[in-house]
Amino acid sequence: MTGFALYRLPHEQQVTMVAQTEGEPLELASCEALNGQTGFVVAPFAVSTDMPIVLIRPDIVKTFPSVPDSSSIGNCQFPWEEQAVPFGGTASSLGGNSNRTTYSDDFSRFFLHLKNGDFRKLVLSRCAEEPVTEGVSPLELYQRACQLYPRLFISLVYTAKSGLWLTATPEILLEGKGNEWRTIALAGTMKLKGDELLGEGESLTWSTKNIQEQRYVATYLKECLEQLADNIQEEGPRTVRAANLVHLRSDFTFTILNNARVGNVLQLLHPTPAVCGLPKKEAYDFILANEHTPRLYYSGFMGPLNLSSTTHLFVSLRCMQITDNQYRLYAGGGLLKDSVEEQEWQETEAKMETMRRVLKTQ
Image (cartoon, rainbow, N blue to C red):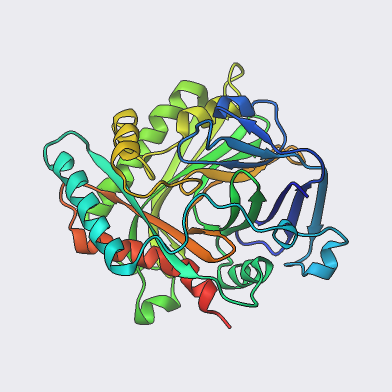
């Protein structure tokens, strides 16, 4: 297999496998190039020649009633069993202390521009590394993630260009079929503790900062949709749970105009302010020039495109890249002019705990 994806939609048991058996997956230079395409999409935060959108052709599509094991998938050999997974970086390049110091430097640089009024919001991300667990296969990690997180979109994806990624994300970028579509504005984060873990976070009170951050994202999405869609309906915001975190979420349903297509909508939406900032173009350029750790395929998007006439694309959050000698975990958070560094650091730690729980589960 030259490209491979396992995915499970939120609140479902069924797992789908998409595999390309011959030739390399298609590499695309823009979201608009996805118009008319079918397959499993793996898109980076910043599309470039070195980091293209990758489309896995659906030579094989199989569905399973639950998470499959190696024997039930068939005679195909997993890519990670055939060779070491490509990885563009050196092992153990980030230590815990230097990682905290680097985050502090990045935060100071980002916060200065927020305080000066250059940006309304900037998203700062970081990466942490964990050693590979001996004797635990990527498929087993995927099984653990499915068991731990029934509310999330769980995917295990490999291409030679992107490498191997495990994702457990709560954020829909775009899903639907025909002309009927939906997206969500997801922002604001709080961690559940103690008895709060027994519920859905319905008793929590949101801070002004979190409410404002979510409103920025929702307003931006609506303004984008008004350019390419009709019959736009917004519901929310409401509190939703994702693992041991809760977020504020607004849902948008809409009809794509006749002269627009899915790739055009994606080109307008991605990256949303939930992973980038505002104003978007300036924030995007600033992040690429100033963020210490390249995001690669973190905070891009992935999912099935036009498979069985239906699309389910999710923002690649709560994810990690799996290599032959380490796991690289990614997380980020939205900064506003009243953000506090230690609180923002702890938010990224809470988000990384989603994947760390997968690694620790026995």
